Length: 115
Image (cartoon, rainbow, N blue to C red):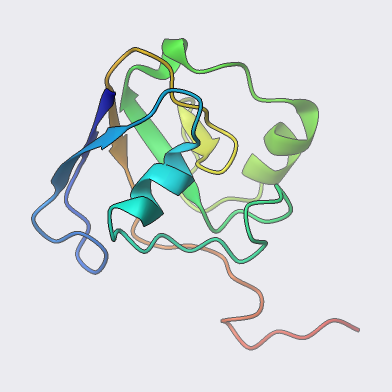
């Protein structure tokens, strides 16, 4: 199992958390399995940015983001050089420290509609 340190988030994880994840699972799956209810509006299909996280430690252990993920990340709130969509960031053997951004862009939740 691989350790993931989740930095405090006012709503989702006020005290922060230390969780364990099976290598090969996504960071999003690991968070959800440990009752950290990160948004994932597209059901982890790499079609939105609601599961955006910033990888503070262990970033280089994750596989490279593909072009679709990179294009979506360009739209994420609070983008950093170590930002990833948690549904696409696959846990390996290296411990990770992640931060869930304070805000997310969720077109459905925000009341926007498709036209």
